[in-house]
Length: 337
Image 1 (cartoon, rainbow, N blue to C red):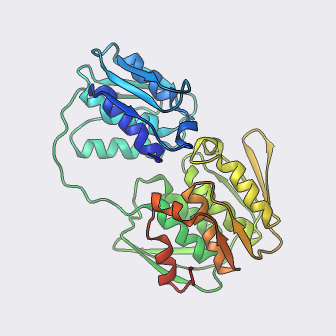
Image 2 (cartoon, rainbow, N blue to C red):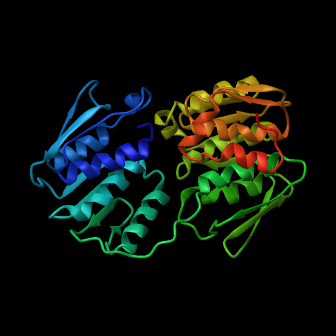
Image 3 (cartoon, helix red, strand yellow):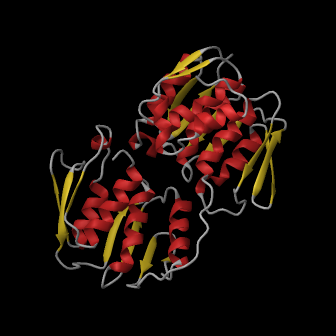
């Protein structure tokens, strides 16, 4: 597999339900750390053995030798997916589970969203900010409407921000969504996009941009590849924090952004630890963007096609999260070949 979310969720599910499985993935997936989650699962009683490099896929899950503990601790600033994986499987444990989060909690909206969905299916999650307690409880059936993906919607905010004129309608997006990437509305408001909501539909149009932006991506790291290229192309400098988790995504997204922005004369530099400065491009001309096997690199830079001819290497990477992306670009008038 090549999806970190899928690997992490299945690791917890198979381990805590006693399934015997070998989990592996693409070459890049084998470079993405899993030790934080595996250590927690082993502390709970799961038998997991690495088959190649310690701390990374592939690994073999050999079952659950009874629940050894009802409490685990893990850092909150690595990936909220580790926490969500443990949360969703916790009700299946005979003693339930308390998850203690050490340090700063990153991507908290995703933890809140996990808890909310679990409660929809009958499981109570008590979260006080640093500790989550989940009792042993059977899930119960419930009706659920799956929201549109705000991460995918973010790219259309970027197209609107960079276009000379625009009016785009995005259906099935909820203004009250728990998704962390819903904050693209506020970020892009500063970059020249007005979003008007009515009946779970957003109509995007142009407005004035601010001259400078500061933004903390701690709760929405996947938006960095949408926001930073827009800033660079619009000539808007900025200061950004909360990018740390980008190092362990599909690629090292900080290094990838630095390389591709540099092609257009923009610069992303770490002024001091955790604080990043963006110096925008003077102008955007033809650019060939490498995607680094990362769907968000392709879609994050695609809106530059409103300003110049653009070549995207390995365009098939969008199939991971938005397989109809290029066709949707064609539908609004782009010549995509």
